[in-house]
Image (cartoon, rainbow, N blue to C red; front, side):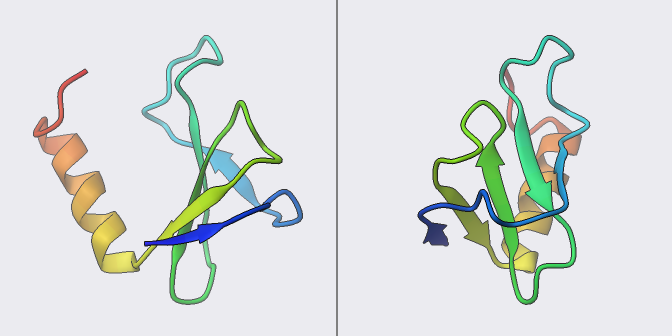
Length: 71
């Protein structure tokens, strides 16, 4: 995992389909970033983001869909 100190200049952020509809607890990701999947808190767009390898991110998404992580 890599930290991106200010990812606000990156374009193409989209909210996760698993984020709640009230604007809280939302994460955003950027598709098509070479070699990584940047992730940030939508409430802090000028704050840091973290970048996961594609394999790590895929494993995480599968675990969420399978219910491995509960709220």
